[in-house]
Image 1 (cartoon, rainbow, N blue to C red):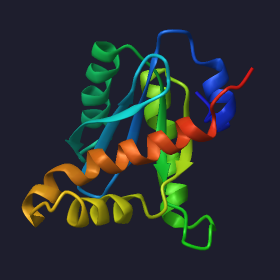
Image 2: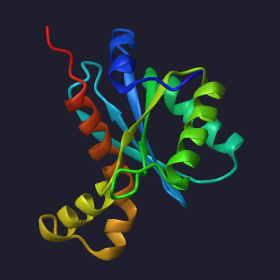
Image 3: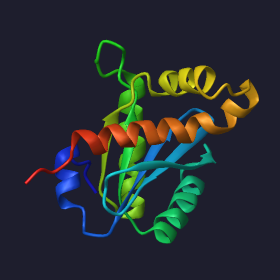
Image 4: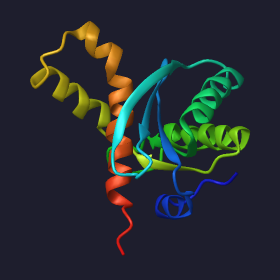
Amino acid sequence: MPLFNPRELRATLPFDKRVLGVDPGSKTIGLALTDVSLMLASPYGSVKRRKMSEVVVDLGKIVRQQNVGALVTGLPLSLDGSFGPAARATQDWIGEISNRLDLPACCWDERLSSSAVNRFLIQDADMTRKRRAEVVDKMAAAYMLQAWLDATIITE
């Protein structure tokens, strides 16, 4: 399935479906879910980064359990906004997952999402380093997914 333009993805999403936000890290893949009204993104969990076939099985279970209709993945653009090797690899990766799960997907800029979440967890939540490591991936996924929701809201 081809990757969609972010606004087109939202416009084609069936009513009552949720969106799964995916923040692929080198060791852990952070996950977030929207509500069915597509107003709020919440941290959901994380899965270990393993072979593609194993990740697809894990994500497929979540897609079925949570009535997911689309995927939005974090795109690691360079700080200057350019497309580097990491961004290209992410597009290929989510494209393969999209095909295997037969779900539409798009990429969304995730620059500095982990930094923003870490800053919040340190300054406002006063979390220990160990506890931050447990939650940062899913919170970064929610941060990125909420940015997509806010930027693609459909006004009538």
